[in-house]
Image (tube, rainbow, N blue to C red; front, side, top):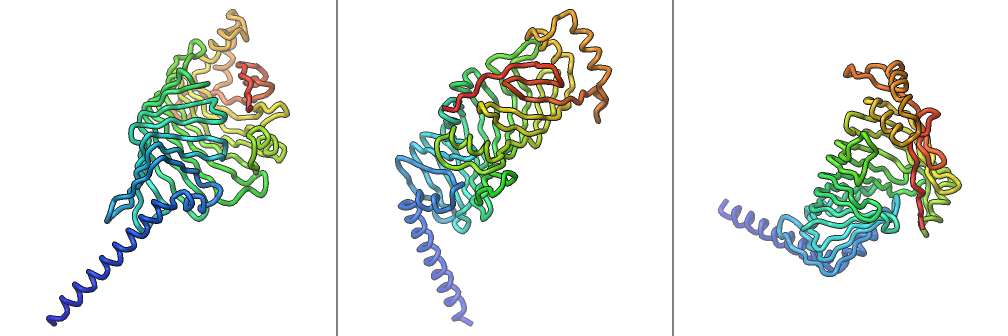
Amino acid sequence: MRRFPVILAAVVVAAACGYTGYWYYVAGQLRQGMGEWLAAQGAGAPQVAWRSLDVGGYPLRFRLNFTDARIAANLPFPYAAESAAVEAEAWPFALRRWRFTALGGAKITAPLDAVGLSAGALDGSVDLTDGATVVATRARAIAGAGAAQGFTADTLELKLTLPRQAPKTDRDPLAEASVSLAAADLPQAPPPFPRRIDALTLVATVRGAMPPGALVDALAKWRDGGGTLDIDSAHIAWGKTTVDLDGTLALDQAMQPQGAFTATVTGGDAIVDAIVDAGVIEAQYAEFAKAVLRAIAHPDDDGVDALHVPVTVQDRRIYVGPAPIAALPQLKWR
């Protein structure tokens, strides 16, 4: 019996030595080949670059500290995020799930650097599953740049799912995204709407294959192959107005968005006032238009009058029913 503690201690020491050897071996592999390892996860995995990398966290974690880090991907459109310092952690036996924090915030750019966002704080996770790469981020203290200059928001949450298998038909998902914004301020807003959007949520799926290459060429081939952006659900609370809609967007031959939606709207009076301010209808007809909207509205689950209307996007205009209510800027992909 006295030999049992000795045997147990030997087993514990052997296990500890084996684990320590495993930890340092993997740490060395991460330090020397992190980029190659990520690339081997498939086309959907983000591309990562950095100036320097330090590995620590022994014994319970692998902790990677990057300086001048940049994470980029091409799906569902080219985007990139960069930060002066990023810390990423994973459990030693679950190296396909990483949590990360951008120390001191990050900068994010979208297609062609036309739209940029800076975040005072950014954290999230990357899951490399057998079926998809899932990136989830939460950003705080948001400020816009480029085409988004003047935009601010308290928080922005994004979850992006990139299937590892490329779409085979125009109904197969290329990417799935859910976005949530809280307390966002626009650079300007059409009267009588305030600049602040109280809340915005969006769940969307990009369907159809998009080949590699220049963005405009890839989008054209995606369009010609039947590619669509399905808005599974969208909700906006803006002043006294709320809008819930779903539908589908595509690109027309001029590479501009076109689509059809079903919308449920409360606070229709504010929309009429905005249409009048835009010069679509004359002020003298505003009260008549409001009366018509009230007549065709129906109470929603909360007893609030809600209007169910078709919304279309065509020829760079937004229509509610047959009436054009807003013009859209031309999208330039080059």
